[in-house]
Amino acid sequence: MKEIDYEQIPILKIEDFLITSIQIPLHDRLAVKFQRDLLQKIEKTKAKGLVIDITAIDVVDSFITRILVEIAKMAKLMGVKTVLVGMRPEIAITLVEFGVELEGIMTALNLENGISLLRGVTNETNEERNVG
Image 1 (tube, rainbow, N blue to C red):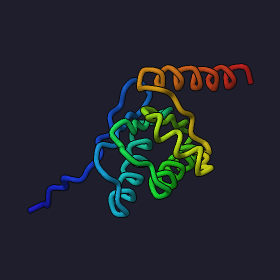
Image 2 (cartoon, helix red, strand yellow; image 1 turned 45 degrees about the vertical axis):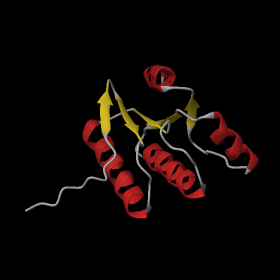
Image 3 (cartoon, rainbow, N blue to C red; image 1 turned 180 degrees about the vertical axis):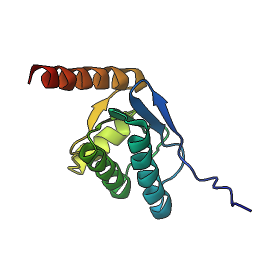
């Protein structure tokens, strides 16, 4: 009998983009599973963009920041742009105070703006390919 994994972060496909919302605390095992699941879903769906919603996260510490940056780097290696959405003011303040940089991650206020940003970025990329 297969064990049910209750610690799973849903990954949805909307248009050419994957959308995921982190609603539960990330620990080491779950973070690694989340990375693997995202990369497999990118490969399977041929997604062009990834939106990670952190609205439900109370604290963004160095561990979560590292995981998010790693995901963005891995996605970039697969040709996918990443947008982080839902960052609350107190989290933004903390990240700036600690000098944390979210290398390779675009940010947007909310999911709607994040999808809009990805549409613009992926359209620019497609136009550049068509010109060249």
